[in-house]
Every structure is written in structure tokens, then in C-alpha cells.
Image (cartoon, rainbow, N blue to C red):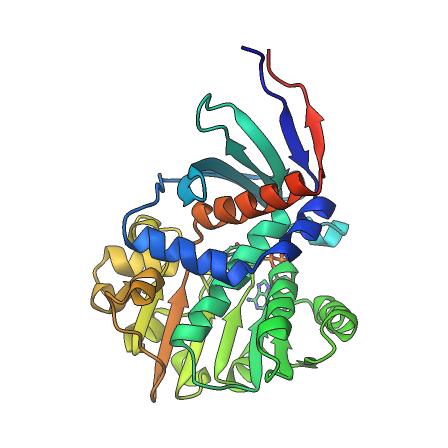
Length: 334
Ligand SMILES: NC(=O)c1ccc[n+]([C@@H]2O[C@H](COP(=O)([O-])OP(=O)(O)OC[C@H]3O[C@@H](n4cnc5c(N)ncnc54)[C@H](O)[C@@H]3O)[C@@H](O)[C@H]2O)c1
């Protein structure tokens, strides 16, 4: 048998191919499959180090399997990051996602992971907002003004035309102005309103999205308006008291969150402090758990981040690329 070639899709091709499908539909479908036990999600491997500039670097290898149109789809996402990259003009995170031929197990497709990773994360936030957020909102608060902030604004502009303002804050004022400049061109329907502190931004609306690189929780319960939804995407922004007082806490996968003591909710779940209130968004989508929208307190969404979302999105990208004959073929094996 002849060794297969490896198809390679760069960022430009991935960005072009995502226009062929609805990312929220793909994400919701995977969450339903995951809630009914039809996915494979092994533990991820985490490697970290400090670079010559003293900045934190890490590599995360995340394998997974999802049901596809023609049978199971297996793959792995390898997403690396150095916090010093943005100051050098690069995205903090980057890597590759691979799909495997289910018959021979050879990697058959390799694609830029950064864009899909940001897309799947923002799509997860929007699915959670749809089911767990306030019934309506006209503005959001964004803490952190990097790549994830841009992708959230892009999807909010596409799916929530009623949202016309984003109150934003970043420790680095240069990143606030860069986001405002980007949004003026890319999401002109959403006015970016710079805030002088995280507390000011959090208090400005009832939908708060954290996309920082903070390793130390700092958002206190009394910063947050009553009846708010918080998408705690960056995982170390909310203090313990916010979780303890929350009306409900929803995660993507209880085991992934609980087994990770590096993050605040993992620590609280390991100590059984929030176990009672934590369910998954997938359970809500399949109807085995009641959705809770904010009433007079706070509903928190805390997604750890699942490879199966990237793999399912990449399968859709691969189909679009194949139809349009995009990408390069490399002879790597044999
Ligand atoms: N949960 C998930 O599924 C998931 C998926 C992907 C990324 N993430 C996380 O999202 C976060 C953002 O990713 P990104 O690629 O946009 O990073 P980025 O480096 O491009 O942007 C992060 C921004 O946060 C700012 N920041 C850091 N600490 C802050 C603080 N305390 N207050 C305000 N601003 C602060 C930085 O100055 C920077 O501009 C990362 O922590 C990443 O790990 C989570």
C-alpha cells in the first residue's frame, strides 16, 4: 500500500473555509454528543517553561474523537503560547491541529490551530450566552483586549446585532487602543468604550467576558451587576467568592475542570466547594439539566476548552478545503 500524503492548510485557507459553515451549530452539536457519551476526550498533556525573556511558555497536546458525517473523526490539537509574543507583534497562542485517517491512523491533515481555537472558544461563549445569558442585552464588557477579544467581537457582531457597545479594559492601554482601532474597521456596529479599570468595565453591563492572561483572581462579587452572566474564558479572573455566591456555574466538562488545580474553579471543585452548582452546557442542550439564566445574582460559564470542538470544526474546514482544492500536499511518510 502506498503511504498517504499529508494535506496542510495554512491560516489563510482555514479563515476562508470557516465561512462555509455555522460554527455555533458545530459547537452545539459536539456539546450534545459529548453529553450523551459519543465523544472521546482523553486527558491533555501540559508542558511549561520560561523563555529567555522570563515569559511563561506552554505547550498543550489535546487529543480527541467526535462522531462525523462518515464515521468517527480523530485528531489532536497542539496549542503553544508565550506571553511575550504580543509585544513582539505575534499572537500569544499558535499551533497545529491534525486529523488522523481512521483506517491507517496516519495523520492525514494538519492545519493552523490558532484561528480555529479562537473561533471555537468564542462560539462556545455565544452558545452559552444563548442558553444561560440574560434574555436580552445591548452591551457587553470585555476584560482583556487580545486575540480572543477580537474573535468574541467578531462573532457577537455576526450573531447579536442588538449589541452595539463593548466596555473594554486591559492592563496594557496600547492593547485597548489596538482593539478599538481593529473594531472600528471589522465590527463597526459595536462601539468600543475604553474603561479605566477592570471594575469599571465589569460594572458597565450584564454580560461580562474575561479574556485575559491573569494567573491571579481579581474580580470581586460586588463589582458585578445583579442578573449578570459571566463567561469566565480565561479561567483565573473571578475570585472564590464569585463562584460561591453564583446562582449557577456551568462548565464544558466536569472532569477536565476538576482535575486541573492550576485554575481557580478546579481548586474549588477539588475541594467540593462548588460541586453542587456545576453542570455542563451540553447537559442543558440535551435537556438533562435545567438551564439557569441570571435572576438577581450571577451565572458563570467556565469552559476549560475541549479539543473535540477544534477537531469537529477542522473536519468541516477539511471538507470545504477539499471541495475547493485548497491546501498543499506533503509527502512526509514512507
Ligand atoms: N477556556 C478556553 O476554552 C480558552 C480557549 C482559548 C484561550 N483561552 C484563554 O483566553 C485568554 C486570552 O487569550 P488571548 O489569545 O486573547 O491572549 P492575548 O495575550 O492575546 O490577550 C490577553 C490580554 O489580557 C491582558 N491582561 C492580562 N492580565 C490582565 C488583567 N489582570 N486585567 C486586564 N487585562 C489583562 C493582556 O495585557 C493581554 O492584552 C488566555 O488566558 C487563554 O489561555 C481560554
